[in-house]
Length: 403
Image (cartoon, rainbow, N blue to C red; front, side, top):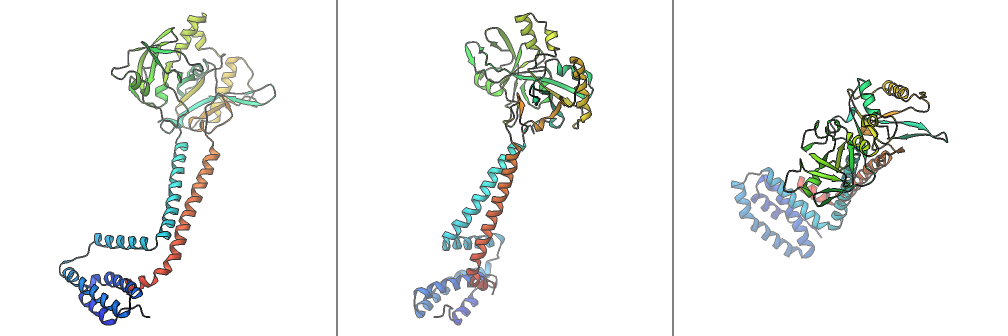
């Protein structure tokens, strides 16, 4: 049984078909005739084929006279062809498309995770020049340990002595949640922090209200987050309003900062000038404020430095260690101490430091990156393999189109 239409019908179609449409029309006609021949006798198939040619003749003649092919027509024809193939091979198409789509979607989600993890602290303009001081000490069992805590007088003493340090800030989060009120309204009290005047000049946390150099300049002031301002000061300017702290102190709102990106190790809703704690200690315990703020005891506060260079040499670390040991009148032992100026961008991935909030694991990041690459390679290989396997079934159609 022949599946080819008679030559005279093909000649009739060629005579009516414009040259620039011949490949497309003849290819469709051959496909249509094969379908007709499988379902009918040769006579019936030829009769329906003649009807197909004669029905198409007016449209083909019109196109011969007025039609000029365009890129859009080419895209339309290929779209039609693609839809036909999808319908003809629905199961294969679903498997192939779903496999590639699932692989690409998985890679995209992993890429978002990797971008988030590797982007920790990236919003800071001076991220490469900001360092946190990490003291090291030897415990009773001989183990060398690290911690984030330094005494309140450490950071200002180092900034005064070393010209490489341009700005400093001490930082701490209240472990106990105090009672915060504005009028009769109770405010959420988690994430209340302490910071020095240069805090907003070191870290790039934009202020919606207030000046970066002034909002933490006065004791008993407070800077609140955008969320707190929107939730509790909706219809008024919060600057100048007061927040009562534990029914003991009134804190005056001096500014409002934008929401902190979630990929930052510093997370707080309020921040109070560090000097305020000195006033509180003096009022409650009679301990002189200046003496407390310059003390090299009471190791409870992290110290951050903004240096004048993105590259801090080990020599500076050693000089700080020696100077700090001299102030404390303790012998400097580099084998035991070995204090560390930790780059801001390494904080998220550094584990094993007491008092730290690091939550990242660089090994997980590397593993997920390898998994994403593996999924992408498998998805592409699977798609290519299936497409190649099916291509042999379209050799006849391709031959007709190229003829």
